[in-house]
Length: 216
Length: 313
Image (tube, rainbow over all chains, first blue to last red; front, side):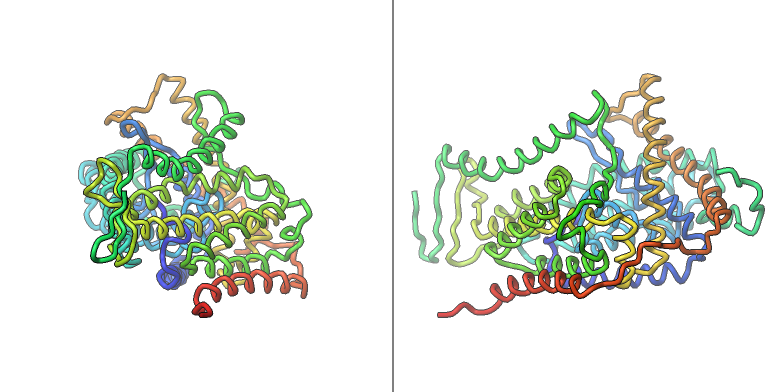
């Protein structure tokens, strides 16, 4: 669920914008310049994945993916998510440009947190990685829903009902997200475990063998 | 039936027919909008395939209108500021005025209406929640009107809350309608370059361009994978098998994108990438561009002032 334009008071959306700008600035400082194009390419796959709807009884839900993005990208997750959200609002109007800051906080902070948590608890076996994936996936969505509710709470007493409903509506999404994240991590652990170690960079350093794959 | 209580609240008990009429007044426009969007979409998509296609923003960027002839940097800067002014509106009347202005903007941008309607439909889920929840859960105020629906006597319908929710919805629609004139009237790269002029760091804009490019690549990949799953008899249900299959599906999608990053980056280096994409369509901001921006900001400020200034006695 994204916050639309016009919902939050201007002071809150501007404050969230400032916080997001700070986050982006820090990300650009931490990340290496040559990794940025790679993060952009991986971001596209997250964007596409978030378009897919899974059936849930009579309706369907799409994944929010903050936990998985955090687990796979680590410190780059905030930047990746903000770019994804920007494109979602300019292409589909999911969220909105004036609410972009709030949405970036809502998805980006849980992603960062879950990324660190995932790395801390994932251990070395398939089972521990799968469990850590489930925790990251479920917690990412839970935190995102909590921040959403928090934004609505700070917007005034009239929004309390909506905030509560938004929290409750996310419960099934949290369960599905945790399950699917567990399967995603388990799959990646078996097929390409090096992807779980860090952001794309450290595996194929650009200084390594530039001649290896020059055919794309 | 109307009764006036000592605290000067007005409570109106609605009959069944009246409540049906009132509900349909709210639901009908939304339902109509959603129906139109889905019907129009259905025409262009294959039978039985859910539509996950990604809209292209700048299909009609080569037309000629007020918005097309506007320098993208000036356009993005002033319309964004205007949007923030609209967000700050609090009264129903001013929000409706903003909505009407946005409708005119779409009309004068000479863009097709469908993408704008799709934008409204995309927000409808979130906004309907506001329309349905806030009137029943908002805080009681002295002197307000409460409607009591039959069967829902424990949850009075606050008219104040309803107008608050409606104002939010209308503001959201007003801003969403401005997006096509703002973003669809120049090529995407020119628009994004406009964002760099208002302080968005260049590397971020480069990443957005690259992400946008690869969205379409991975979307095709996704469609191809889904087709092969379908051929093998996969149907999505609410069960663990579906989640496992989708988990593997997402895992494969992420792995293929990860494998691709290095190749993409090296291909870019081969073509002389030095951390920046060269741009060829720089256009200086003219006085006319600034004047257009000034008009929009003035409109926003006037709306805000009308509402904030105490009205004349």
